[in-house]
Image 1 (cartoon, helix red, strand yellow):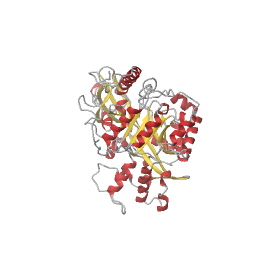
Image 2 (cartoon, rainbow, N blue to C red):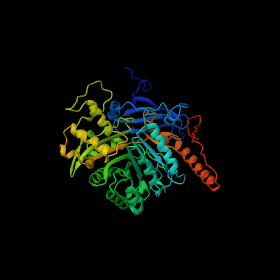
Image 3 (cartoon, one colour):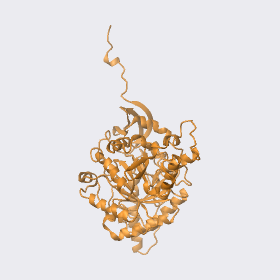
Image 4 (cartoon, rainbow, N blue to C red):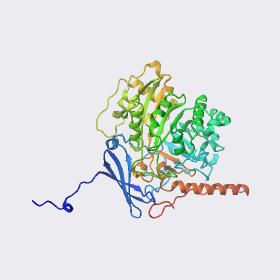
Length: 507
């Protein structure tokens, strides 16, 4: 018998072709086709730019969870008003345009580009640029209310927003409007050292929740990620001062492979014990802005972090405690909640079948539980498993209390003071030029709010060219405003415009 020639033997692919989507070239930002592939229980994106060749990146560390996440994909909610028309197609009509599949759960206002740090991984590439005026921010807030009715959450960011001279009036302006939750994103430096600023922050009613940069406990972690090795003491001092004035804090660690992945359990245990901390949002480091040099095949993803949390907390939280967030694309964000009393930590999903009530695909009837209808249970869990959820607030406390009542987790007497016992762990994997996925962007519910009313999905803003063009135009607007003021002239700014080359890259 003659053996077949090697050239005549067909070979199987090393991957399962799962789906086709659209992405961008990491070099020129041209919009190109991308294949989503399953291989070795992981999920990869493979794409080819006609000019710059092939690229491949790890996008999810658990293939089974990725495939199964579709059932958590909640139907989107349409905003009251769209701000742009469909002209060029996604992702070049932001936004939000009528093609967008979700309203804005969280609006982010970057009030400045200046910063008092110089972090090597800064996706915003903070530095010289612009300061928004209080008038501009008030206009942004008014338009956000116009498009959302009652916006769920707004977050002030930068740069470093605490060094903006008008940040306190800006926060106060947000609290006066019909916005449920107001947040301040900060590295904590000014809070740690400026008594006057802390006093002003304490005077805001209700106080904003603090989204607090906190990457771990080792000097080497901060040297690599933040460019400053000796800032832990300053961060701990800021957290203690926030506890003194009664601010809710969400720790936000950026997680980088081979840098601080071994510190996740310690961060969780610290957060559970600190009186100010009500939650943690772990963010796999994404490689945009300054932070582009990396191996895209070994990057951290949400499932990787969840497994590390389980291993490093000795089962305090386990993989089955975490579920995708349905309002965005379900592979972007996962979270869990627990009731905490001293050393006792009771994750809610161990007492209530969260997966049954956040399943939007399976054709089956989910049961009422006692006096609570399935619809009531689903609505309550949707409020908790949301991109706009802020632990430590009265709203999250009520929703968690109702969940505990449903599953008889706590006695009636324990529910009254439950807000201080609710703890959240979330994971948010933002897209970068290697992992950019158009279908995720089309359902993104975290948006950058701009002065002319545009609302740009976060991962489009940081990857396509919107950020660079916004920075250039707002810096020029600031120069023109100052010149007009010096000459005693009225200033009427031109609206922001965005242009892209024929291949889709930002000009």
